[in-house]
Amino acid sequence: MTPRTEDRPQMSVEEFEELERHAPETVRLEFINGRVQVKPVTDGNHDHLIAWLQRLCMQHRPELWLYGDRGMKVERYRKGRARPDGILAPFGFPAGHGDWSDTAGVLMAVEVTSHDSDTHQRDRVEKPNGYAGAGIPVYLLIDRDDGSVVVYNQPENGRYLHAEKLPFGASVKLPDPVGIILDTAPLKEFVD
Image (cartoon, rainbow, N blue to C red):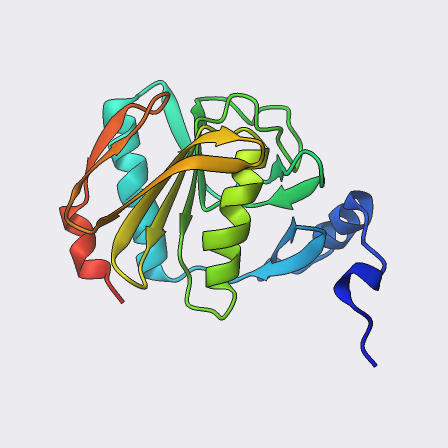
């Protein structure tokens, strides 16, 4: 008989950080909801979408930077660790932070869906809750599976109170404190 999830011993954040330090460079690990998760290595289209967003953020908000794969401390009450595909924060944000940054000062977390069996649970369920729980004002999900952009905002009590899903090609307003409008027409060629 397999033990129920709640009966299994939980890994501590310290144990996870030690495991993550020794993982090969080809593996990216996260610690969400008390579980170790392997985040897939990105493909070229994934990287291109992050570069597209980074360029737009620089044009509209030059005082900010979209940092890729920055280790973040999320889920205050569960002490989670995540590596968003991007975080929008003031330029110089991670200086002196070590491997894992607190979320104070982060305006937006960004994820681009990957082609693996955990995408739904990780990017559409667990990440919004983790980022909201950490107080990140905006979570942007670029969903290549159905050609949509989902903007989550208004974090409260570990959940975002508002989410808006728009198709690739729409004009997408990233609410304050981000304050950028994205023309997502270029994303149409990346529907998988």
